[in-house]
Amino acid sequence: MFGDSAMWLLAAVVVCGALAATAIGLVVARARLHEAEQRVRDQESQQEGISARLRENENRLRAIIESEPECMKLQAANGTVLEINPAGLALVEADAPGDIIGKPIYLLVAPESRDVYRSHVRRVFEGESVAYEFRLVTLKGRSRWMQTHAAPLRDAGGAIYALLAITRDITERKLAEEHARRHQIELARVARLSTMGEMATALAHELNQPLSAIAAFARGCTRRLRAGTATLQDLREPLDSIGEQAERAGEVIRHVREFVRRRELALGRVDVNQIARSLAHLAEIDARQHEAVLRLELAPHLPSVVADPIMVEQVIGNLVRNAIDAMTEACSPRREITLRTAQRNGAVEVEVVDTGPGLAAAAIEQVFDPFFTTKADGVGMGLSISRSIVEAHGGCIGVDSVAGSGATFRFSLPLAAQEAHRVGHRHGLHR
Ligand code: ADP
Image 1 (cartoon, rainbow, N blue to C red):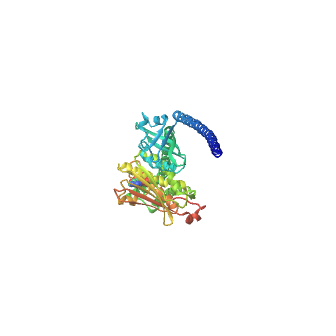
Image 2: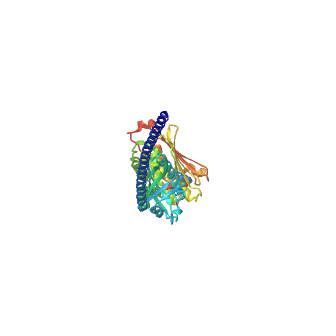
Image 3: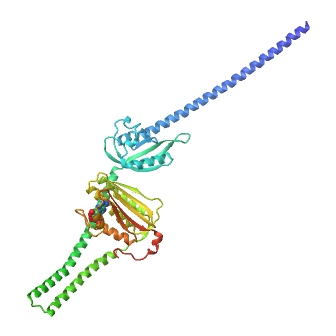
């Protein structure tokens, strides 16, 4: 009996103990649950705070972009416009965002600017920030010049997902520059023509006197000989005078040559590619006005030559100008000029290739002669002077052409190493 009661008591104690333990466990679990819930709530409110701040930042950024007076746009690697602000829409003359968003920007970039534009976009997607200028044709067909600063936009993982560009209209500045450049070219042309004109007038005037005197003395001699009254003594004096006047004429010509020879070459180490680039920059406007395209094909790692940079630029400029003239005069349907440099046979070679009418065999023989011209307002001195300049540098100049299929004018300048000994010596043209 006692045994049973004790058993029951023991069982009751065990059950009570278990119940108490369970109750304590429950209390602890609830407390932990409460804590966890509190943590989740804290995190949620923290998260909400972050999201609100992010939204606020995004709104502020959007407000800035929207009110930014300059065009801001996001663009994909393939040129698709992802976003653009109202100033940008106005710049491209879009009536609604849908006119431009989702479309390729290359619809607006002018054909001659596309290659440059593409290469800058590529650089941005490789991680660079770049600035570039290009011509754009608006959705309403107006031509405008733009300057863009572009930078890569990265996602949280660092991958570039878009290009952010700030673009401004620089048409006014470009027009002013173009005007100034055209003015300068015109001034240089007038100065060249007037210098040549003045020289020719002075030369004609100086030569006229001795030539008239020679003619007069010769006529006198003939008259006396015809009349049969002249003695040898009578003829000696006018013949001596003829000789003197002829010498005087020779002296005048010698003076002119001296004058030209005094133009010494200002020799220095010259990067021909650099000269070609700056010349192309200048000639570009001229080419465009005559619907011609000027392309550069410059040899990389071209060694420098010892030369007078202004003279070299004058030669290239002459050849490019002639190519434009030839294609314009012949109304060539395709007007392309390729300005190419290369290293060949111990020299730097420059080629100006055009798609104009070319030259007939007879003209090829004469183009470098002074005063050979087929132009109504030509002087015929450009190629002659170019040859003098190239030869004064120790190089040579020539032309290849098949009539009807363009011309290739080519000149060479010996490499600096071979020419180095010439630096510092007197150099003149027309030696
Ligand atoms: P100008 O330009 O005053 O005529 P140049 O000496 O520069 O004098 O040129 C002489 C002539 O050579 C030109 O009138 C033209 O007939 C010919 N010529 C020069 N370059 C070319 C060319 N690229 N294509 C065809 N003809 C050319």
